[in-house]
Image (cartoon, rainbow, N blue to C red; front, side, top):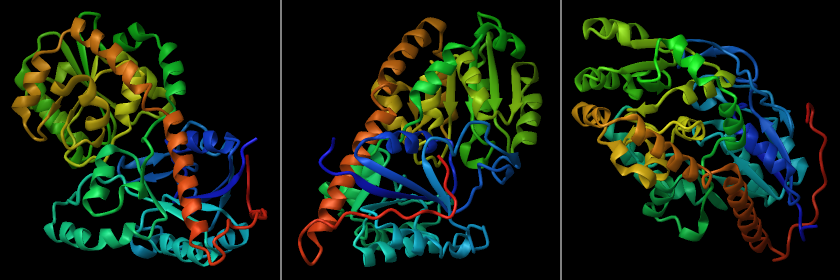
Length: 417
């Protein structure tokens, strides 16, 4: 048995398909007594997804395998400061007598500051971070970057321990003056085992045949929302420039650029070699990744992009722009040539021209080896170490200088395992 079992409250804005497997593994760890507080149930219940432009309800379990409670949102539900306002979190955190709180809401909402205040009053270790790898904002407004440069060093010093998902985010924290021993890299991972298992059962030939692709064709995949900052138009234009005689371009995703992409395919004379699958739910994605030969992510703003993890788990090498956070940790260590300057369509076209089945098969094996070192196991190990450090630091700052007394559990209003 561990010397100490930590009572931990994870605070999340809503259930997310990438986080649920982490919560399940964390809850199963002998050192952790985990409770998750959801500030809304968006994602677990079908709702309009503004990015996809359609109603989405994820078809994989999001609420199984760990204890959770729903704290009602009294806010507007918008992206404003009071869009997420959960005053009931005060009672959950205060009465739960937690050793540590992991806050995943982001600081731009009232709920974050409620959690920070009650954690301080309760002498609860408070862990949070960011997936950002640069100060620049998605809309490119310089005043936002200047404000972050001034505010963020103060903001992240409010964390007992800063948790970040990538080496780019870690370096950003260090550049802002956050001490290295106050920053823990918790790798942004997916449920590798699930993706590997699902990919292993895919009838690749049948899926490719449904797209009109033969064994000789190279299938190039774009898998993301069809949003401007994902730059899906860069890919279709690079595909046209590359002039690949035996290649097919597949778009898996939905969004406001769908109509323009379809028009572009016609105007470039590519309509017969481009497929639009629309929104693909989580359980169907392994078949899409496994049946492609390579995936391309041209985004201009992508703090990490777990679609890279997913594709690699399913045996698909990935090409990405240098603005994709995962490019540094997951792509460059295997094939640095597959990382190109964002917006450089000629550079992307050149990479596409160099593709062949033999090279891609070798790279798929190399990516498979690498993704196994960026897994939930590494995430859990790092998260628990961050909790240990944070609790030790919070205990040491208490007036008595001794560890916080044992915690007494609180029964949530709604809880399921």
